[in-house]
Amino acid sequence: MSENAIVVEGLRKRFGTVLALDGVTFEVPEATVFGLLGPNGAGKTTAVRVLATVLRPDEGRAEVLGHDVVREPEAVRRRIGLAGQNAAVDPNLTGRENLRMVGILGQLPREQIAPRADELLERFDLSDAADRPLRTYSGGMRRRLDVAASLVQRPPVLFLDEPTTGLDLTSRNELWNMIRELVNDGTTVLLTTQYLEEADRLANRIAVVDVGRVIANDTPEQLKMQLGSTVVEMDVRGDGRAERAGRLLEERIGGRVEREGDRIRITSDQGAHVLIDVLRSLDGDGLSPDTLTVREPSLDDVFLALTGRHAEAEVDRASADEGSAKGDAA
Amino acid sequence: MSSVPVSVAVHGDRDQRIPFGVLRDTFAITQRNLIAYRRVPQLLVFSTIQPVLFVLMFRYVFGGAITLRGPIPYVDFLMPGIFVQTVVFGAIATAIGLSTDMKSGLMERFHALPMARSAVLTGRTMADLTRNVFVVILMMIVGFLVGWRIHTNVLALLAGAFLVLLFGYAMSWIFATVGLAVGDPESAQAAAFPVLAPLVFASSVFVPPNKMPGWLQVFADHQPVSATASAVRALVNGGPTATYVWQSVAWCVAILVVFAPIAVRLYRRTV
Image 1: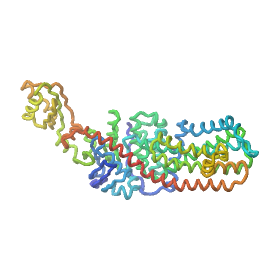
Image 2: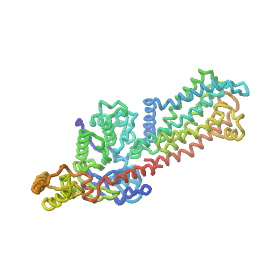
Image 3: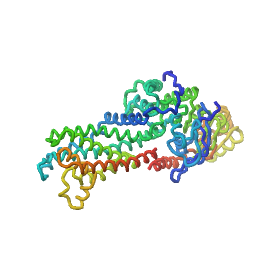
Image 4: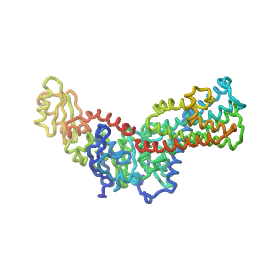
């Protein structure tokens, strides 16, 4: 189990003027989940496309189970499953027809195709809708079928590009359970996500990606230790009060205190205890917050901690990345 | 969800090739595209209703005003042209189908599967060829209903039908290229018509080119749609066939030799 299923070294990919991947390097041990965490346009999808042999990298090297994605794409394709961001299924075919088509194109032996399709339809709770064209499916059902399609060939390596975006809570939890099951059975999963929570729940290791570079690569526990597990956010309005509160908390609270205007953000790894300390300190000085939120750290908090910038500042790049994918095709 | 295990046991040697894998892949893609024609009938409307309207229009509205030299009635002149026109306009469906797939993300899945690279294109064009078989039979029935008669024999008719289908297949590869190049169905349709209209109307499809202005006549006499229409006409109406048939076949081969490699290259670059 110590072998690496995926090895990525110095991957670079440019679309026109946008450097989508700027020397990405990471390794994924067999039978583990690796999370690529980053905002839209950070380069996550581009990395997955290169690994899935859909895109050729400009520079660098990528191997899946010892097979180079550029020199041996066919061998790689026989070992991977890919579920993309936009449900890549045929809207005119039924669920069953879609899975059988992928079975044929995935070079599954003829006699295994029909049973495999039925098995997956049942597993993903789509048996009742199996013979309806996909046009009639809900978004969540389509997404489930897309993931099912990526499993038809029983791939030892699975790429899931933001698999739970647009899924409701129940479907999301079911998909998470399924991913865990697959990994228990020996599948290696590369997962991209914009949600720290998702990466935290599933991944053995998380690489945080920012403008085409890996800016952190660690276990979720280590990352959260750096970040703190609880974020308390509050607004203290009125002149100078926020500044006063900020200074006060900085002196008395263990954890990181940041202030932006009237907003104060405290990141701590002491769970809910920090909240009691915060409120006691403020109350003792005659201050009280106007709004107060306690939550787990988000991707945005990770970004603030790692780069000093908000993750949302990446929106411009995201549209550039999308536009350039088309540009490459033209 | 139920508890059926999703095992990842690797079956046999993953790199083992399935015999006739290319054919199997092509057939799977062909079938998928044909299912779409069955489930989305509006895809067929453009390639059937429109030529039927042309038959009715030219047979009953314009036909009376068109006088031909010789004993052949206008309807017998018209129908072979209509068959060719039908497959030429029908080829737009190849562009629309491929560009729709490009937009849907389905191409990304195909690229990541260990399938024959060529199957997406051959499967698409084979589906459109199959559709053309039905559409040409339909147009022949429509032709018989409006008074079209064959002056030669069934074998010559079959040869004519074969030529029409071959030409339609060649046109499909032109439009496969167009569809992959523009990448979305609306642009594909918009790009197709200005190219097709002169090929179909400045040809011998509806009228003999000898009454067109000299410069247009030169074009009309030396383009593939005219060559194929004249070849089919000679086959079913009688008269010397060899020159036109060889011209038409040569055009088909030339189109395939030029456009199939371009389409395949474009496909490899699509994601």
